[in-house]
Length: 327
Image (cartoon, rainbow, N blue to C red; front, side, top):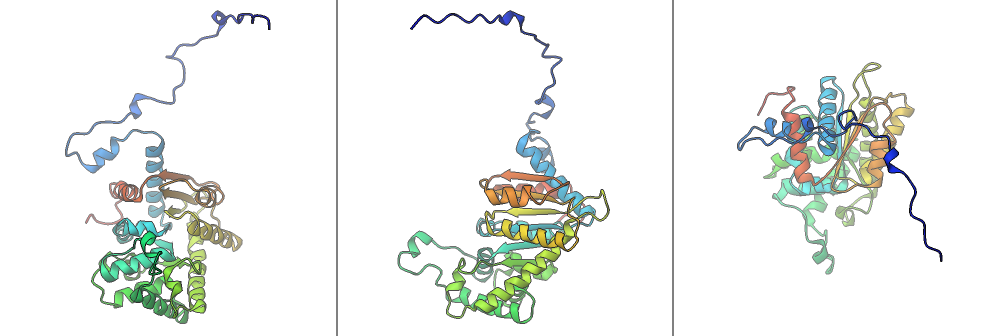
């Protein structure tokens, strides 16, 4: 092969411009500050760098506060790990402050919340208990849900309401830490969306498919009605916010169907905003919560551990929210 010729391009003819004239995406005004030791939470939040995740957090907080000041619904669909990592009190506090006005969850979240109220503890080592067939074989939890699903179906209260009322009336020692009990006490709608066979309580002999199906279908129809309230009061107004917290499949799928029902029945959800909080990115929250349903509103995604993100989101809201007096 012949010897390759050297490049003949003349870089001295490049058209250059001054760094002082070029538009910039990063400016020092948005850099992190270093607040003093013992600084207030408001000062600490203000010190965060104004980029990427922080800007999404600030945008989500602004959307939630604006929605509530416009008397729009702020709802949250959540998975079981939100309860399992101790974030139930965060949801309870935001309900009590009038920030969260509707909740929805899968069946596993309901199970862990009930066990927290009953015994102040929940969850088991699945890798260990699955080997001898003892996984999920818990008498009290199975009995509780068999009765709750029957009541939710028979009274047409739905599963979420039946669980909350049963906890309130049960005299359990840790009811004050139950999201379901708080929702029933505050009359905040909380719906449960069950996939039959996914929950340990479905293994019980007393489990009734008819009761489970009817109770959770009542809840789905209630959620469709609630999602229809995410629109703006008037054209150009601020829409509500739907938050998906720690659910990769069930709640994003349920939310998408509820949006379709609401729009089919005439609800204008164009101004709706959505938020996804989870430990990793998943396809369905990205598509079914953040992308497909949102038209003129905004969508926000913040990735990280629930036990860090939820307290941070709550505190950022509390620092600005004046809808309720400070505790």
